[in-house]
Length: 129
Image (cartoon, rainbow, N blue to C red):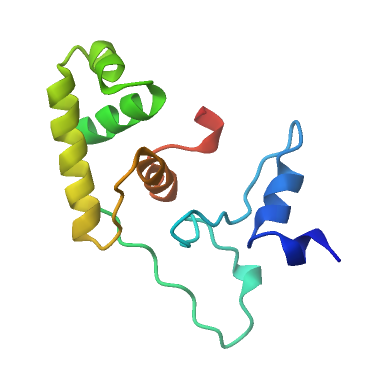
């Protein structure tokens, strides 16, 4: 029995790369089963079709700023304080962000889903966290 046959797709590579000083470029399978923005060409045999890129919503700079502040915060109120806006404004931005993800067929109903989407779409990286 090997770790690669027992773990989800890419998990063994991710675990090996997570050693101190190691940087991970292995694909990561998130909760919804989509590969996170990174696909290795070596994973495809000659004649296989390449996966189509995930549709990316057009988030404004401010929406990205609010999203990242909220992901880093314990609450909407904390994110609001960092950004000098109200918690209801944070909620409004998050509702618009979720609507944009829904519109491209990639729902993000929870904070975990939004974090995964931010990683997939290059708005943040694991190095930041």
